[in-house]
Image (cartoon, rainbow, N blue to C red; front, top):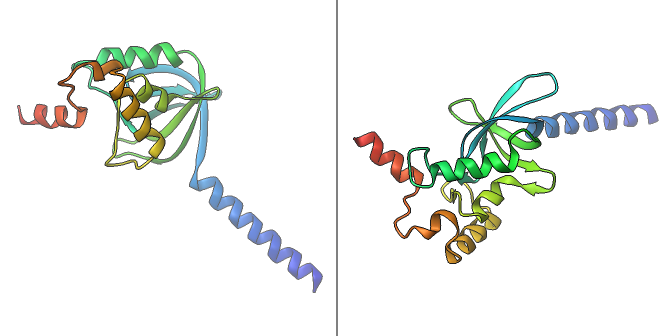
Length: 162
């Protein structure tokens, strides 16, 4: 009888472990490419590459005001460095959506704090990101120094009509 209880407990622990492992994964690797202010490619030790879309943020498009500055910010912060990515989903383009960490630095949050991206409130209700954007706006950091700063989702919508 005692063995049955241990077997059941063991099976339950295994099931919980599997569910947790698949619900959120961590990737780590060297940043080998910075596409723009919110998309990077990392390469792990097995030389497998992962395209990562930074969660909670939307950076200006490359041909938009502050697009190059946003990309350069990300590049100078993490290019060639080993990062870890907390991810649990992919977008419609197959990119992993996640939060990137360089050491203890939350790279996604650092982009917002520097005024290099917007907090995507339609997809993220994270209060830490909302507060960081508000503070960047108040201090007129980065793109917030432009009184006519256009969010990238509006810019893309306008460009698709042209």
